[in-house]
Length: 144
Image (cartoon, rainbow, N blue to C red):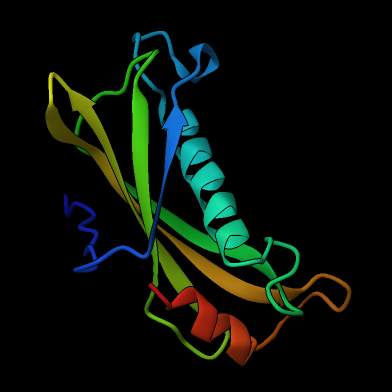
C-alpha cells in the first residue's frame, strides 16, 4: 500500500506552541489521530489570525477544508508542548495547501511528531459556491 508523503517547504512562515491536554489522550496513552487533527486546526486558526484573517473571513472569502493528510512520526503525550510550524503553499485560483510540521523537544532534542497538509478552498457560504482567493490574502499568506 502506498503511503502518504508530505513535502515540507524549505522555510515555514509561522509557528506556535500548543500544549497537549488530557482530553487529547486516547486509550493508548498518547495523542489520538482525531486530537492530532484538532491540534492542526488550532495551528491553522492561529496562523490565519497572525495574518489578520479567520476561516470565515479571508479578505472577503471564507474557507472550507477540501482534504487533509497526516504522517505520524512519533508519539505525543500529556504535558508535551508541541511547536507547530505552518506555511501556505501550492496556490491555485481558488485554493491552497497549508503544510504543518509538529515537533517537540525532549531532553534538549527536537523530535518530529508528525507532518500534515490541509487543502483549503475559498468558499462563499451564502451562495454555496467555490470562489477565487482574494489577491491580498494570497500575498499576505506567502509573506515570511
